[in-house]
Image 1: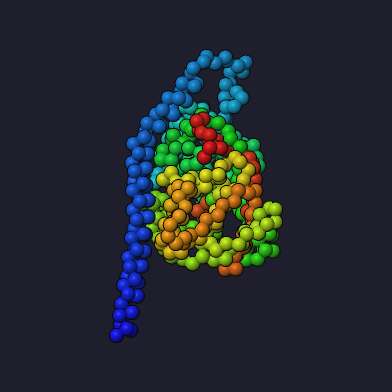
Image 2: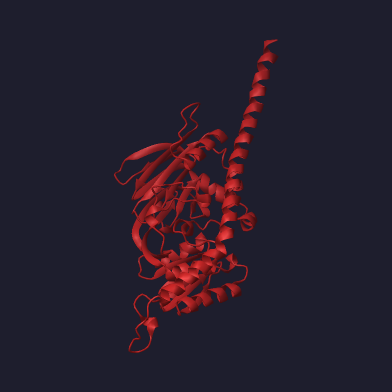
Length: 399
């Protein structure tokens, strides 16, 4: 009699565990989707108003005071005015490139009166070669028109130079643009923001990786401007359906992320510049140059684009319940579980550099680009080396 009676509760507990798992996943997904839909509706309502306001402000700034004619009559050469603008354009991110070019050229002509040249990216060259050519052609502002990958490629050439960089976002995440308040859904408004904005010297992160300390040390540096990641976040990006991203935007990452919730944590060692080493059980290690995510979530409150530091988050969890604890801390860092089992860990570091080691190879991503695995990462930050055009009202150090 005892055998069957004892087996019953175990089966019942198993069903309860599965039910709690499914309810936890559904709760997280439903909450995120609701927030996303609200944000999308509000942004669409304000899109045309932003462009009109920006154009009116630009016109007002040009006419608020009488201009003194120069001896040669060429106001275009006045200090601070742009003469040649290059647009590095990823054609796969825009439905009609001819219409895009026409709109951008009209804005530049009306607001700045500068020349505009377009350089389209290709599969073989996603932006580096085009940016190098634009600089060689004398561009004093290079606009990255595309997603975070295009932004990375343009920045990798312009970092350490005096050439200004601007962004016309048209990707899934558009994370750098979000963090510096560049208009997301209207290319013309983003172009106006660059023309009428201000230069800000911002930091860039560099990542090297490999399957041993030696290969990572000798590997070429790869740039990241937003977040590089190691583990579950890279898995999430890899699992996300590209067709779904085109249809519903960054919400697609939520569905890709569901598959990563139940993965196992691995042994991770992080080493800081002072040579101290710290062991963790982790599902993901995030290296943040900025910290704001889509939907207004702030994952890394101390990751600002001009503080000369990276914020590092090392997070581990057990099952859906553990993941929900991590998600709760992301939404409100003060909400640390005080009752019940602690099924998650989250450690943060603010540092100029870090080495990350794990015995088992993990997928790696840089600003959403992922196609590699590694066991060793070396990350550093290069303070203030990129001259980024941001809207006049933006205060990057507060993002």
